[in-house]
Image: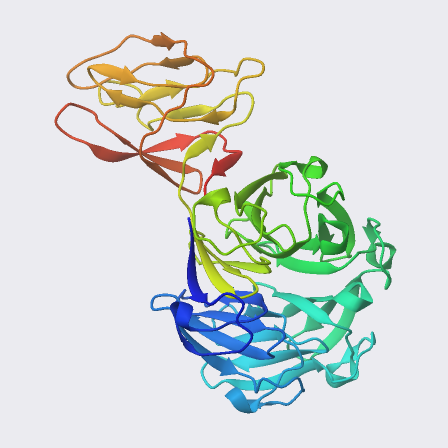
Length: 451
């Protein structure tokens, strides 16, 4: 479900306030504090950093004068040239800002703003501190040890590497001109680099190649670039790998276990999710049309979904759009297993104490892969699934022999369940008097349909 946390449609100025009484504009970057208490926004056009408290919807101006100029200072005495993106340190004490021509560091406790690298002059020079130069640095991401920043230097068509301890800037990959080519280092070429996300072990980057409408990867050790998903066609089409299509992918965030990559599709006005293991791309929210209506899944609408940021438990996604901060919460509706089937079973499925055992056999050719979960009651089996289901069910009161259900292909099933990691928690009734949550293991999950 998509809800509006703060902002007003077509606002052109920065007005602090609560919820929709606050005004936001050009929110190109969003981050969530490690404790999930605060959300910070980079307002590119207004040259401000705004702070939002999600619990109350209160919006305040954290840093910046509102004038496009490069000045170090504290809070609203500091000035930004055009802040585009932000990235937190692991402990939450500081965040860094991609500020068009420089990388800035901001103290959360004091609001003090300093310059790590770059200056007020554009260029492409590697170097240390202010001797290095950028040309529209718009995205950044920090390694898990807070040692390195990777930044998208958009008008130089490069990904730059900045060592935080000494401000040394080098080039990881990119030819220096617009193009599309996989390869290592400067042999690779990009269109507009609209988003970056870093894998859990800091070994590779995900790159939203906005100009080429693709998701790419870059190995951090040698800058080797490959295409992960997207055909290059300018449309929003779900699919796997290069069969999927994007319309200007931009800001991204990875779940904590590197299972899914969430992608803000700027011109497509949608939120997409890609499975890291399979490359399958699924539309989570957004109709594709312009709008700001709150709703569930593809019934919701966005104005330029620029960036996304997950909370620490991966259950809430914040979206920065042109005029709003939006919140997407996960509401699970189905479990998708792979095409050859899988197992859904109680861990103690042998003996009279076992409450449930369900074996999903191989799917018939052409059968849908969106599965529900059967509700089991000792006196009956309530299961409506799109193909054959075999099950043996036990309880202290009754014991069932295996059942074979042949059901219509268009049938579905809905019972309560929720999902964490590779564990599904299902609500069932072991006897007619009690109901309780139990834990079941899923052999393989390709995708969780949620909004």
